[in-house]
Image (cartoon, rainbow, N blue to C red):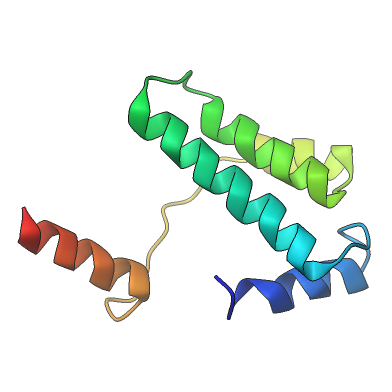
Length: 99
């Protein structure tokens, strides 16, 4: 999170996609909102569009243009394919072994 995301957030601000703010504030917005959304989804049922609503809120908080948000949120998501050595895949493999 703190190795990968800050440079991309900074690039988003530099090119004008995100409003200018402290990088740490943007990371708190993304991480805090994402963490709370995950906690909410793991503790009780949510509406089917809840994840998309959370993404929309994060993008608005970062200052992304409403037209772009609408474009992004109406596109069909493609399956995410990660390399086996990625942190997410390794973590998932450890989780499955522990089951």
